[in-house]
Figure 1 (cartoon, helix red, strand yellow):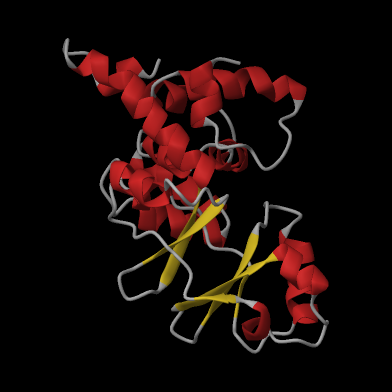
Figure 2: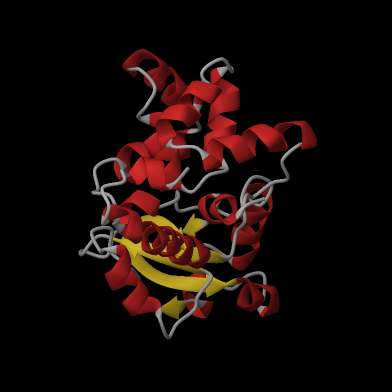
Length: 235
């Protein structure tokens, strides 16, 4: 697998079947227009599964190359969380954090007990990698983050607001990749919450995804100097 494949693929949350690996590799190594053509013959459910293996920005770039009717069918097939996140991400410019957001899973209210949260996380972990639990109020404002180790050591009846890290660091969706890189340089967290300026939680960003997205742009810059289109530079 080439470096561009490793960079665009966001650390897939599940293993790709051997017979699909070749198609997946072709999808991520071609520009979005060609990738959409490759996926065109496949059922909507399959297209959704393939797009979910990519980082959200790459998935959106491919999704937008389908005609409107097909794009709407694909969105209708995706889970509610994925559909909502893709729709939201489209409202942000290229090279911003908003384009890279994933749905915020494992979100709880302050009064949720450790036992209740653990039970829900068990189900969520079957389809996604859960690194932190997030605590929000009734307006979805981020109040705190709970580390899995702290949940493991806590009493089952304890409330999450008793063990959470209050007022956590977060990124905003309108931040450029460069500004976000500067902001996280000394933190190195595996996952960053993404909030509006009001503090409302709207997405998550994996640290690896941020560094990979920036690496792709840096590697593409020399091409811009000689008039090479962005999509061509990613092939």
